[in-house]
Length: 276
Image 1 (cartoon, rainbow, N blue to C red):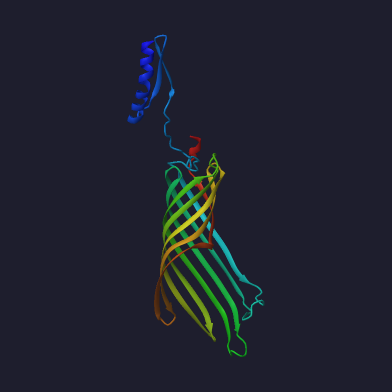
Image 2 (image 1 turned 120 degrees about the vertical axis):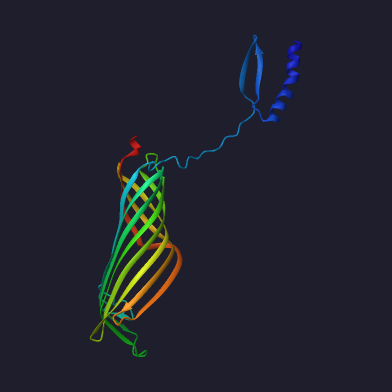
């Protein structure tokens, strides 16, 4: 009986000392000459893991081959709704293709190299501008043609996030550093005399391109990306048929959705890591 009273008096002091020292405290009682350990008396702190990166879309070690492409047309069959422009005969195409290769240095993260080719072709058969008799301005342009070809190269980093637990759907954010060199030709008629202008251009871009990806087959993934702008530096040198030259440089920063930079693509993974 004396031992039991002594134990009851010393228990609060022992628990207080354990709490001050940061050690885990347990209540231990004697029963039939054996010690029985009960549940922990003091609570323990736990880190909340929300498992945002739990869904894996691609695995470390995968090599991906892919291509993105875009195509658009510009035409005007009827412009009678406009007040000052009339009788426009415009027809043009814009096409772009970008093959790339990438390597997943860790799960859901890829670095890669992208090449590209872009072609722009436009023809303006005629254009009439009439500001009315009071302004005494009437302009008519005929046989205007524009064509341009450009080649690009770039390095990019793409980070994926899986949407579903199976890793079939995902979102990605892509940051790209690219350069482009190109040449364009513009020709027109001045009276009965044909004239032309030639331009050489160089551009550097840091662009942000988010998108969505979905596995069509176990090793084939379809993508849709959107250009949201970035930083750009450009330089253009121009020469006419008389040998006169001129040049200009420009730089800009712009972040907005570019409807001319919406690309549909496909990526082929050389092996399916998900089965391993």
